[in-house]
Image 1: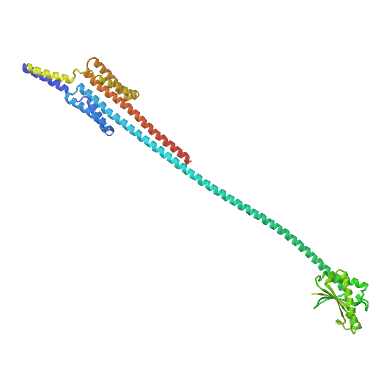
Image 2: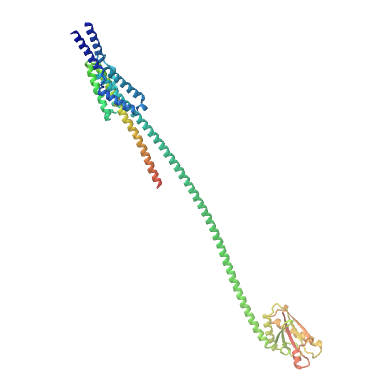
Length: 327
Length: 127
């Protein structure tokens, strides 16, 4: 009986022991172990090691209670606490991670903003430079244009001057042409007059060229009465024709009027007569417009006959007045 | 034989003490737990679902602990307060985690927006 009592009492004690620490873990402890495993494999070890350690210590405490007093309220409660502490470690790790992310993002934001600011600055600098270069180009173009304008202005001035010169030259040329034409016309007129005068002269006189020049020979009978030196009334008309030729021809030459006689009578008388007759012709020519300083008179007497004095015809030919216009 | 019974009884009694004996009122623990709950509420735990759940658990367990204290079961109250306290702390941490994640996201959004604006501005310049 006593033995049975002792055994039953020991059994009760054993039962009590089982109640305080058996091998089967409570659901709370299983959850706590799982939560801790999750936390240990997450970021908590890196980010919040102290909190993970606290969770580990809480779990260890729960395990000890489990070993001592398995299935007890204490085990459940401490496992509950251990689970929450593992979850707390994860939440805190999450916080730390979020804070890190935020800091990273903010740093990136600052960097991006700085980069953008720099880019904007560079862009502004480039734009400013481009603008400056453009302005310089523009200024150069403006200067070139101004130079070009000046050149064009100068050229226009020169051109105007040249045009004026040309116009003046043209006017001068025209004037000269007119003068030339007038001169030509005058010359033609003079030549015509001369030809007419010569023609008229050749009707009453012989005109020939010899070594002395142009020689106009007038017969004595045409001009004078025999032995006299006064001009016949008809002679004046004839001498007018000679004057007309002289006016036209050899204006600037020294004209010589030579008187000649035949060999009838004394030489000195013939010489004087020829001189008087030459003087009469000269004077008359002067009266007809021939300038006195270009005309002289010479008496040659019978010294230079042009025909034989033995015949009447020859004598008549030798009685003459020659008007010599030098070459 | 009496002696044996006496020893067994003593062992059993000592074990009974280990499993739940009379302890002082855990007044400081109650205060700490209340403070932890207020802290969680202040950081917005009620508006974060997971945090709100743990906040509720903390509050319920605080109530339970206070009931236990009222019934002189301080041993159970102490354990209950331990649980309430970690729930409150967890609620606070979860609420904060969400807030921090939001801030991080805002910062990321800010960068995204800046880059988009920059891209837009560049495109605009490019044209």
